[in-house]
Structures are given as C-alpha cells and as structure tokens.
Length: 400
Image (cartoon, rainbow, N blue to C red; front, top):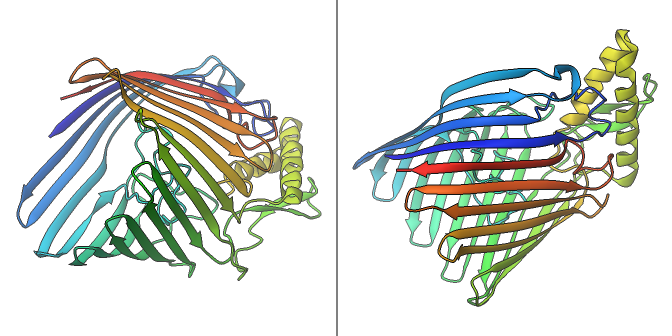
C-alpha cells in the first residue's frame, strides 16, 4: 500500500470575457481549500493481480463574483478513481477489467493519439485524471512487440466532455520498442461509426537529443461550429461536420535537448485541423457576445442566451484554433530538493498564451511542498483568456 495525503489551496480569477457574461456564468469559485486522502492498494499472487485507488476529498469553496457572490459551500466525495483485476492467462497473455487512467504518448501539450482521454494530466500532476472503465486483452508476442485490444465500456468518473454523450469505444493498439526508437499505432472505433487512426513514435538521436511525433487521422468532426442563420443572434452552434468525410488530421512534432547541467528544454508544435478558421473564430466570438448580452433581457431570449453560452463553453474541441506551440524547461533535483517546470503554451492564431510554473520542494523522505501557478495572456476574446485570468495552487503532500 502507498498512502498520500494532500492539502492545498487554490486562488483563481474568472476571466471577464463574454463567456463570463457579467454573472460568472460557469460559477467558478474564487477560493478553494482541499483535503485529499489517496491510498493505492495492490494485491498480487500469480496469476492474479488486484488493485484499487479509493479516494476521499473534502473541499471548501468561496465565490466572490457573479450570482453566487458571498456564498460558500462544503463538498465531500468518496469514490474509487481506479481499480483493476488482471489475470495472467499465459506467460505472454493478460486479460484485465477495471477503471483506469490509460495514458500514452510522449507529448506534453496533449496526447492526440489517445481516443479515450483529452487530458493527459501533465499540466498539473497534482490533480488526478478521472478514470474510465476498460476491458483489455494484452498479448506480448516478442520482446519488442505488444498488441492490445481495448474496450472502453463506461465513462466512470470521467464525465463526457463535449456536445455528444458517452459512447462505447474499441481500440487495437500495436506497440514497438527498440533500443533507440519506439512507435505505436492505434486504430479505434466508436459506436457512432467514427474511426480514428492514431500514432506516436520517438527517436533517440544522442544522449542529449530526443525527437518525437504524435497524431491522429479522422474524418469530419463531431464538435460544434458557429453558423450564420436567422436565429435572434444571427448565428447558432451546430455540428456542421459530423457527416463530413473530409480528413481532419491532428499532428504534433516535438523534440527535447538535455543540457550538461541536467536541465531539459522541450519544444512542440501542433497542427489541430478541427479548430476554427479566422472567419469561424470571428463568428464564434460575435455569437458569444450577443448571447452574453441577451441574458439580462429575461424571457425566451435570455434562455436562448444561456443555452448558447453553454454550447460555446463546451464545443467538443480540444483546442479552439489550429496552430499551437509549447516551450518547456525542466530541471529536477536542484540542490537535492527542488524540482522545477516552466512552460509556455502559445496560440499561434489569436496570439494568446498560457504560462505555467510548477515547483516542488522536498522537506524530507515523506513530506513535499508544491506550487502550480498558471497565468493567461491575451485579449478577452481569445482562447487562453476564455475562462480564467490566473490560477495558483499551493499545498503540502505527505507520503508513507
């Protein structure tokens, strides 16, 4: 058993964009205080392996703006974020079922090859990614190859994000691991007949240089896009490309260089084809401003405005535009106690950006101080200043 106790506080400022609508439309609290207990339990007697990750979370929230101004609230959650039962059928054949956070791929910005999770958990490793339910069959035909069949049967604690409800999905994943390179192909299918082909790979050029790539190829998009029409706002959010057979690839290329002082500099570029064009983005923000302005009118037009803002807040797109870059510097074990991550993410289309700094300080074998701060840059109607202006998290983790 591993057991961790985390206590932390969060200060965040909702962005006064049109998504805010003057009323803190998403009801974002300004202050949060959390206490979490995270035991990880494992039981392994060959050929059976069992594991569970029960969680207890106590949270106190305070609102400073919007309709909930001046209010505070206590919440508690008791749940099992992950659990797994695995049987070794043969020396190289495994069957498992459980609730897991299945992550893969080398990218930091996001993992486009993963058809199950939009969040790869790398922006803030102290916030757990909710698990989903999977059945898996894993066959290892040789030392360099692994073949997996994966069935995503339930959303678990990872509630559906986007305009579509959860749909069962299936994937065939083939992994190759060599001495200086690795690669994977992931063919996945959802029950609405959407088929995706994902892939990633990495190459070790030298002790200091690593190159990698990741992506997915799909037809159409199930996300919401703004379309001009005769509605009161002159446009509405619609699934324009749901039945479109046009290929919309998502591609990411990256590389890292490790200095002699053990610091690592990483650069990534991503082309996100499903994102909005300039004309679609202008239409999107115009629609959102009109919807936000209509909320104060009351009546049916106010209801329509609230519905539209719900759609603009949850379009189903991982990113809003098409071109992104990430620059990151990482250095661990500074003076045997400090780990540091500095990350800048740039939207190359609208000019907005996001700076994230993560610092951990070891106070001994069991105790760790940590801080994760994020600051947004850009205009009010830009992607990275869409929801928050800033967020700062600081806390203490005890492990035994």
